[in-house]
Image (cartoon, rainbow, N blue to C red):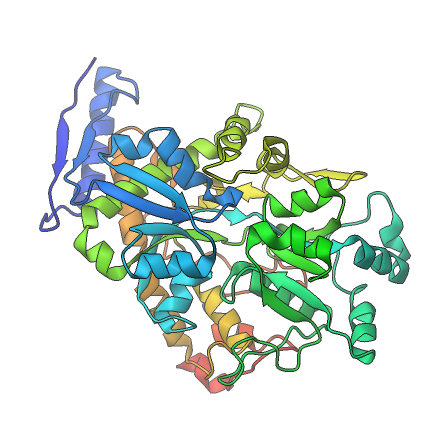
Length: 478
């Protein structure tokens, strides 16, 4: 084997820079070309990790996959890490255990580091250098509500109704409940979850008010047509079957579980609500990151490799590792659901009904489309939704959104990890955004209502909605 040497990366006082790593990668590439060596005959990056024994938390959802795969495929071990991954009972417990140090880090809702850092519900500075996935959620309603939606909109009676399905046919049903003095209850997983903002977006786009948060009302039910309540993901199907809730927004496999059990119908996915939306992240406290910087880098390296493995395809674009991933995730220590339930969405198929089975190759995205990169614009979208629904109680200038995103999202850590992997021959430069990328995805209208989101104009975006808080236009210039 051709040896190109070893790059030693020291402890936290090391002065190695991203430029050093990129230069090492370029030097390696030249050496490989001159020698004819293969990519696997690469330089080895040895990080002097400060804390080799780690415990990470997760919730039993398929999008915990990068953490699980990094462990099961030995990627953590190759970085000198001995990692335990442990299921948590709910998102609040998970976050609290990261904050108090019982967990070193965790599979988190994308909104959790953001909400905690700005003091929504909990106050603690949480950072993320890795986005675990795009998409992956659905909105499911009970069989009875679906039947009523079909009666309101006969086009839905088709065995394969046209998608995306808006909440327009749900509105008269909700109105009827309100007129009769009955609550229309739906579930979501956490106040700062993507699920909360997605179901609110879907409802509000059809003129259904999902309620406002105020300083006095932390439940978000002021002026609500639909009452949204927190329900742990694995309990969603059971609560739907019991009639406690009439629908819910949750990640997989709990929408597919409703189909398998014959108790509900998924009506839309978050891919249709916002195409390629961020869903989960890997989060640690700022204090932990500062105390264990090389350990953090090693973790991110392993997660990048796991995401890349999960999204690997053959020459025909077929995902080649997802069935194996579904099998691993079905284990009782991980998601603990049947492999046949998990593999529907994981292998690129989503079942809305027995008669409506659709290919959705991008339902779960872990690496392509730069899904694992911590984009500032993704953070800003969550901030706009927190302000839209009142969790942020006062208007903020546009500059605040960018400054806050940079306190929480840490692409510089991701880029260091990526450069190391390129230098080691375990990834290519094309796997990652260009060096001059500023962290802002392009403005997009890929939303169910066609509204354009431009992270460079958060105040203008916030004010474009009929339902929700509005802020003075003067703030857009500050």
